[in-house]
Length: 627
Image (tube, rainbow, N blue to C red; front, side, top):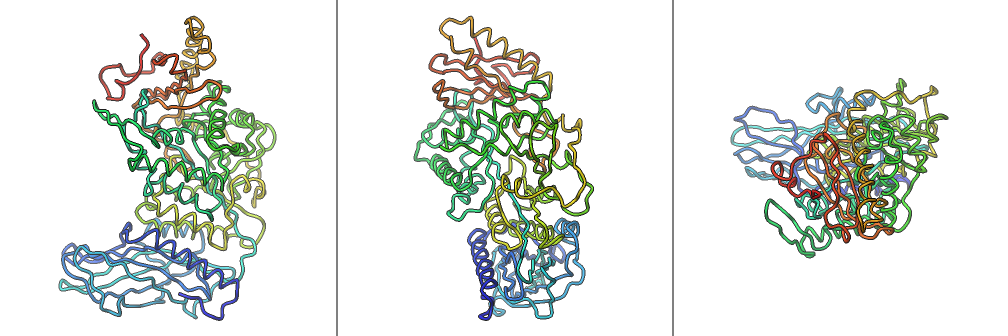
């Protein structure tokens, strides 16, 4: 798989980088078969599936096209005489054309021309019924007749497998992309990837886990565990970590001995349990990852800042963000980065931005519909906010199509193909204005992003390894890339009713404020609790299951449970955070010293529709009630 002994040093380095990335791909993907290629024939014909397991992220005159395939026999007859054919189509002209090909895999690219044909095992390979055959890496130089445009181009690649059997012929094909570069890249496209680490609580008011789903997410083959492990590598890519300390609280509780309550049974899980060890390893990896990429803090428990500000509760909106930063510093050591803010989607306006500016944010991530543009070319992520928008200097607007692609289900079912599709579209973005003025884009998945381990590793290593991209933290992107290339202003437009519907109802938030006042008065009247009024806090919280981020849908699952998270406060000792999530609303969060008051005072907003102590969900019966 060499690029040739006559290659110049820069080209040789890119060849080695490409092969190294391909080797990483092979180690990641293994023999998994996530993607099902198009098949030909009828239901009675032999069945065959072709899967892409790895592919070169970049090719060129001196860098061969390398890929690895797997063939699966889903029929009842043995497959033999396997043949692989590769064809490339005409260079893709626009991002929309690439997106159409990616979203319609059955469509035929224009101008297909054969470039390769080979027989696995020199024609001796066979695949038994129900079996999967992983093929060796195949590497060939691009054909000499293919003229690569300067500085590069993106082409569709169609891979086809055919075989014979006692039941007749069988075939299957898939479409992916090839990025071919010619010459040196002088001005790569700057790019940042936001990696949010947030998870809703999995504990009840007593501090017991009500399921072990978090352990699965934190495991090595789980989404969160794989993210932390990948970013803990010594040569980890420079992504932008944003952490909700609620997740570290939950992982810390699971990292030792913990209780798992299911129905009426309570099980004590030991510190040596695989789930406990996974949580401990996750925390270790996350600390190392944070030392490589200084994280920013998400508001604690995904607090709904836009709705709080809209209800006139600016101080309440600021508190969960400031608490999250303080809590994250206690856990990590160094101060988290405060220059970048990423509020949940909602009714964001100048008042929201002012609250974020008061929290020392300098840049804010805002969805593209709030800062629209009519430009035909891809615009830089950075948008100057100007004066009168709360003191924030700039916004970072995620690329809508690429951010949506990160959360597409194909990233789970077709990790290698979909990671290559994302890289190919970044190449198309670079080729709009190649080797020109400074340009940069932002990739922002939903805040509850759960990529598969294989897709995440392929994605971040690809973003860091291809020559047309310069991966950097979002904070640097905001200061190094100007607004443009369009010359027009991009004012913040008013939020819509659809934005309002994403958040908490103003009536509910006013009820929270009322209950807060009553609890404060109550604490002053209770003997022996002189500090309760200072420590008692009510925090409306974002609805569990509410999608967030540029790619999020407008619907949301209503919460069903009440939860309790252990947390430490250096000023008030051990504290418990009671997040009583109400159906159709959100949460009231109150903190108090458990040593002084084992039964947390529970404030019930009027009309919140809280379930009674008996009946309803099992977890509802664990809610504390004041006597």
